Length: 109
Length: 115
Image (cartoon, rainbow over all chains, first blue to last red; front, side, top):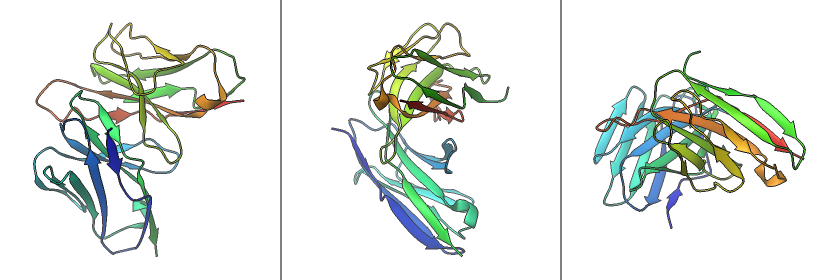
């Protein structure tokens, strides 16, 4: 079956750096997405990786290793507004997104 | 309208009743999707449409139906609601043009409770 694994919850301190990991086993691979979802709101797009390596976008970076079925989202200079759930999703061979359950990130002052 | 809108925002429904959740986008995206999100689970695809006039089944289609009469609208119907359909429902759209990221953009969601 298809599976996306990410930690359920993480805690970090304001101003620090946090890395959220995602491992996947899917039938085919056509890209990996990270979304941010604040409580009670819709998911919003953060990043996309289809080739191995690091994609940097401001305070957020996303890394992909296709051979290892692994990605991470790196958040730098954490702010209180970064408290949210972070969703990892992989597009499979049918071009459908398979979603992880999300990682709830709690930022403490 | 800007982006994707969904209606209603929330609804409490008696079991056995019929309910249609509305979704409208103004981005002229060709593909649209319906997901449900339950605590502790990832988003699960209910139905999708790659272009107006076509629809397909996702991971959890039973008890739901959709139609795509035009580009902008993609309603989701629960023919006879059951308590297990209590969930938050998200509509999404993407521009599946080939060669791009085909990123999905989400509406604000509908919180449905079936009693």
